[in-house]
Image 1 (cartoon, rainbow, N blue to C red):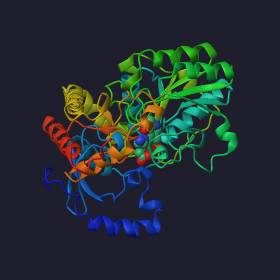
Image 2 (image 1 turned 60 degrees about the vertical axis):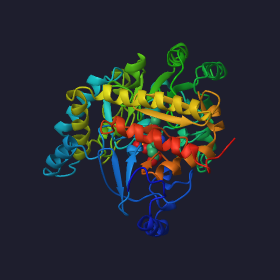
Image 3 (image 1 turned 90 degrees about the vertical axis):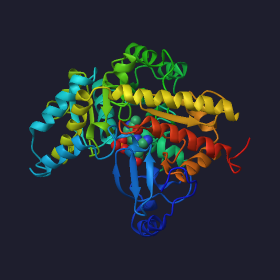
Image 4 (image 1 turned 120 degrees about the vertical axis):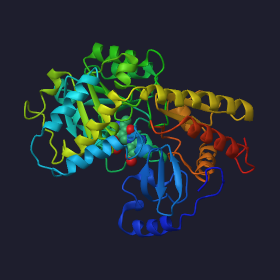
Length: 441
Ligand code: KE4
C-alpha cells in the first residue's frame, strides 16, 4: 500500500481475527495498549516485520513508530539479532541453570550503565520494578514509595496508582483490585515538580523507601526532565535517607548509549531496565549499588526468582543488540539526526498551519501534543487535545504510518528509519492536519 494514498487500510483479516480473539482473550489483546481503545478502530494483526516496517495479515505495510513499545532500537528482525537467535536456538531453549550468556549480558550492562555494579535479569520491566521496590523497602526498612502522576512502572500493585500508559489511556489510572493498604504506601507527585516531592518528604519524614522516576517520562507521552529536576530528586532522597530509582525500562540505551543516567550525569541508587536489552525477547533487569544488590537471594534474604530469568534465547538477542550498538559506528548520531528532523519539521508545521503543537523529544523517543502550553507533566499532557491526536493517528494510519495508539505513549524510531521516512511522516501529518475533517478549535 502506498504511503501517500490516504485511505484506511483494508482490515478484513484483522477484523475477523479480532472477533475470534475477543472470545478468548480480554479485549482480544495480551496487553491493553494494543487494543486501539484510545483511538478507536481495529488494530492491524501483524504477520511480520522487518527494519522500520510492519506487515499485517491483510498485506498492508506500515512505517512503524511503535517498535514493540521501544524495544526495536535496531529495527525489526535485525540480521545480527536473528543470527544470534538462530545460534542459540540450535543449543536448546531453556535450562533452568546458569549459563555463560547471562554472565556476558550482566557484564555488558554493568560496563555500560553508570549506576550498575551488580544486576539481576528478570523477564519484564514489571518484574524489574516490583523487585527493585521490594529491595528498597528491605534495605531502608520503610514502606513508602513516591511515583509521578502519569508515570508508568509496569503493573505491580504499588505502581497502579495514578499510572500512565494504558492505564491513563483507558481512564483507569488507579486500578481496582489494588488493596487500600498497597495504595496507601504509594505517594504521588507531579513530574518536574520538585516542590511537590519536597512536600511529600516533609509530610512523611523517614517513611519513604524510594522515589521511582522515569528519567525521561514516556508514559504520559514523552516529557523530558526540566533542568534541576533529577538532581533535585537525588538531593531530596539523600537528605531523607530514601533511595533514588531510575526506571530506565524505556530510556535505557534509547536516549543514549549509557541510558538517561549517563545523558544527564545523575547516578541513581537502583536502575531498572527492559525492552532494548532483550532485543525483542522477554528480558527485564534491576541493579545498582553492590551493597544493595547483595541483599538479594541467594546472597541475602530479599527473595526474587524466575523460571525463565536469563533465558538463553533472550540473552542472546539482548547481547547481540548491545554488541551491535557498540560496534556499529554512528548509530546514535543517526537516531539523533532523525530526532532533529522531527524537531524542525513539527515546529515549522505548527507555525505554518497555525495549529498549536508541542513536540517533546529526548534521544530516539518523542511525542506530539496538540497543546498551546508546553507539556511538562501529567496535567499539561492530559489537557492536550485527544480529538486532534486521534485524527492525526488515523490520518497517518491511512497513509501507512503506524503511530502508538494513544497520546500518552512515546513515538519510537530505530536505526532502520531513514530521513526519507521522517519526511514522509511530516508530509502525511501536514496533509492530515490540512484535511477538511481535521478537528478545528
Ligand atoms: P513491561 O512489564 O511491560 O515489560 O515493562 C513495564 C514498564 C516499566 N517501566 C517503564 C518506564 C515502561 O515504559 C514499562 C512498559 N511500557 C509500556 C509502554 N508504554 C509497555 C507497553 C505495554 O504495556 O504493552
